[in-house]
Image 1 (cartoon, rainbow, N blue to C red):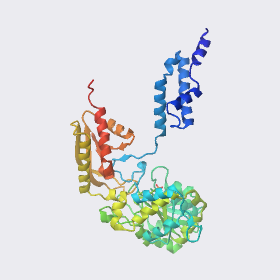
Image 2 (cartoon, protein in one colour; image 1 turned 180 degrees about the vertical axis):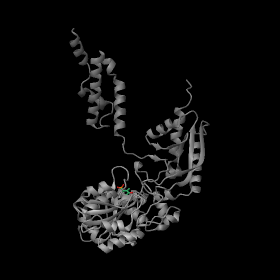
Image 3 (tube, rainbow, N blue to C red; image 1 turned 90 degrees about the horizontal axis):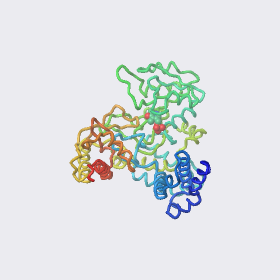
Image 4 (cartoon, rainbow, N blue to C red; image 1 turned 90 degrees about the vertical axis):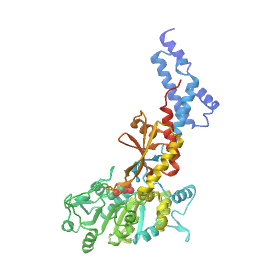
Length: 479
Ligand SMILES: *Cc1c(COP(=O)(O)O)cnc(C)c1O
């Protein structure tokens, strides 16, 4: 036989796809996995086998071992079909962790989202008249009540809210912003670029560290559309600095009949000073100062789902609602359901902290966190059967609010510091992150740190199991 015809006859022994599909069915892979996915997996494995036969001069028995193939196919498809977006345990202590999905939602919000998602809803339907209505009506009244504003609306996120305000109120005209507030809020949200995207013209005033009211005043002309104030969120200017107060800006705006808009970033509905956090003006105080529109996020300090909230003067909010961009930025029914539930928590300040996880985590006291760390330590000890290789210490630590909120604030607390004898903390951190239910930790010095501020009590046993897995994997080999 020539070399070529030898290869042809060896290749002919590879199973045909049809045969493999029958075999897959016999082995229970159909209908367990989608047929198309299974076909792709089999075809790509056949292609690899074929290539090895050609390149390495192998026979079919060496490249296609039935039992190994089916186990490998089943595990590849199982992995593919497992949720890619999935829960993780946040042991970092960063409360509003943008990469980990920002705010965990209150139970009442989760239930309301599920209820609305499962079937039909009165999303844009007025049950009294039987006619079409607007999706905002379900939260507008609540937002007005909580902020004291005349009108409100919500879009997909705060970046969208700012963009919509610029497009609807300032396209083709000038927007005056202090040079100290031309900030970037992580990723691609930079105020100068958003102004351009909104079709407006940026009119920067003042200096990086100081801007005076007269700087704003000197910039005004017949083409000025807005005075925009931006919360610098994730950074602070310290030292010789100054900005006009919001009241001064509002006074100037009134004098010249130009709306004043404030991008609050996080926005907070309650007085955080009562919980020992730095006092930023509440939304109601901001509205009282006379600002014409304020925008903020639903999933930062508010503790709700991702959303962009706009409150302020009716005349301006109506323009936003009618703008074509609003359709592209509109909020979906699940978010709206969750947002409504979270806002209703704010109606009862006495139970608010218990109900909204973000607020509870931000305001847990060091004493509470010390006790919580000790409880975590006990659970871990128990699950790991007091394994002597595990060193556990409760130590003072600080956590962060995250999400650009309260950037300069260290939240004092306690954490569980953990070492596994002879093990590099980096490899432990990596293992915990790669689990089916990942545990995201921090490393401080040579310690793996579990900050209980962001770990729910119900997750403690899982943290214990994760460490137990590590102990078993790093044990001495007996045989
Ligand atoms: C976070 C933030 C935004 C963006 O809000 P998203 O809800 O993340 O879109 C815009 N402006 C400021 C000042 C912020 O802090």
